[in-house]
Length: 304
Image 1 (cartoon, rainbow, N blue to C red):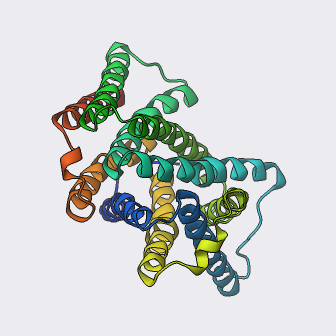
Image 2 (cartoon, rainbow, N blue to C red; image 1 turned 180 degrees about the vertical axis):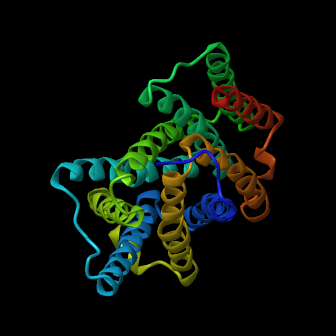
C-alpha cells in the first residue's frame, strides 16, 4: 500500500528519472533530425529494451528459484492494456508529435498535463470528490494548454504541422495517466520489475506491425554508431531503469505525489533542447505563460 511520505532514496531515484526522461525528448529529436522515422525509433528502442528485460528476468530466476515469471491469465489483458497505453500507442504519438512540433512542447504537454489527469482519475477511482477549487484548477490548466499550443502555432506562423503535432501530443498525457493508475493497481499484486518487463516486451512486439506497415525495419542496417548509441541510451536509462523507478516509487508513494516530480521534467528538456537542437527560439512568452497556468491548475487540483 502506498504511503504519504517519500523517502530520501525515492527522491534521488525520481530526480534521476526526470533527468533520464527529460533528456529523452532531446535525444529523440536529434535522431529524428538524422532521418530515422518515429516508428523506427520506438520499435528499435523497445525491442532492445524488451531483450534487456528478458535477460534480467532470467538472471533473477537463476538466482531465486521461487521467482515467478508468470502472471495469472485474468491479469494478462491488463498487461496488454499497459503495453499499448504506456509503450506502443504512447510512443508512436509522442515521437510523431516531437517530429511535427518540438521536444519542448512535447515535454510540457505530457509532463504537466499527466499529473493533473492522474489526480483527477485518482479521485474517481478512490471515490473522492472534486471541490470547487479543484474544478477551477482544471479550467486554468485547460486554458494554459490552449495558450501553449496557440502561442506555439503563432510563433511558427500558424504551421499546420505544429498544430497537428500538438494535437497528437495531447493524447499522450491521457494514455500516461491511464497507464500509471492501472499499473499502480496491478503492482500491488506482482513484483514491479516483472510488470515493467512484460510491458516493455509486449509493447515492443506490438510496435512490430507498425514498422512492417511502414517498411522501416531496413533502417536497422543503416543506423550510425551515434544513432545506435541514442537507441541504447533510451532503452537502458529511460526504459530499463526508468520504468522500474517509476513503478517502484509509485507502489510506495501516492500517485499524485509521485507524478508531481514530472513538473521538473520540462525544465530539463527545454534547457537541453535549447543547447543541443536549437529550440531556444521556440520557447515564447506564450509557452512560459501557458506552462505556468498549467502548473497553477495542477496545484489547485492536487490540493485536498
